Length: 468
Image (tube, rainbow, N blue to C red; front, side):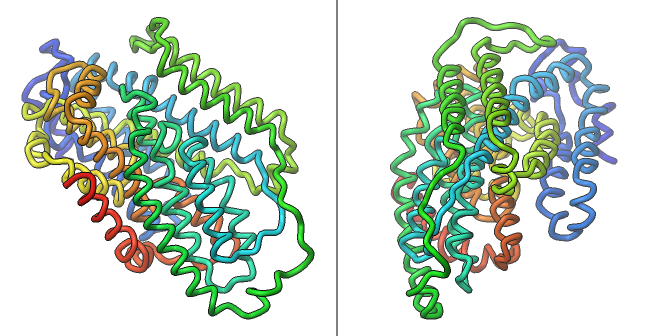
């Protein structure tokens, strides 16, 4: 394999040169495992679904080892440090946040009779969109997808409702805080202030307003074609709306408070396996674990069972992102070196906010929006803030060219909705809907029937308004 040749053919051995900036030494083909990992996630579930479901942990581990073994052999201690930095400072906080929100959200059950009319459906989607930035797109999806499906159980045409739910609740609604969507949390870990993302409310408001209006028009068209008894006489006795597991909201508030505190408190740092971790980050991670454990211990198993809460979706996310985080180390390192890295041609191509918006969004559509966000952020830092420490570079980028980071953040969060594979909650919502008997569109059917006619024009409008 050509990639293995970089063990012997690297132009500069960072370990020998004593240069920690691996991005200058790494050759272009060191990005191949990252590409292979993401293409596996994109294509194998479509081309070899049974193989993927049984063996995706082996695929993720295989790509991680293809990178790690020659990387360690070629670069020694700097490579060890890079792997430890990624695992301790990036991957573990990322998985802890997703896992805690998923666990706590699974302990909240919404009961009651909801009639799946266009206004009711739109209300559920809007509420989920508003919640997503505060309990995460994963948490909002877990909380509201089943009540939405129960409200529409008697309707013949339901797939479009689930698709717009994916658009807004599983993606776009998470744009306002680092809790909302994994890309923004990674940005927070890399130096973006917690409350900075609140400035994205204008972009989010425009996109949400356009898509809710489009949904109401589409659903009204389908509603008129439903049978009269579905439209006029809901089946069975009416059950009042109520929420069980209310106490879990306190645990969600605890997670939110811990993340906010970690962005506004700097008591110092400690070294863990040679990696500097802020004490505030360790406290945040500990509180998230405690909140998840408290939710698990105080919520009855029967309630979680009735909520169809299972660990397989979050297990899959944790395994796949372990492979992604390892294999993206060379890509991020090269991009951070600007023109001096092997990916300098990317730095020279991506210049304007509009290009950052669509480049980040396009990659988020076909790969995954969390690593894509970091890749685009590294591209911006490599181009505009070359040579600075990462956190200092991020703050200077915000101060001098905030529109670039706005384009990256909105491109990653918004366009994760373009395909099923753009964001982890997309597949989660699709899987739950199909288990409830909804015939969801295929991968390409989703794009042709919904992404191209609805999302692309709205994103083009957002480009013209905010990034032209």
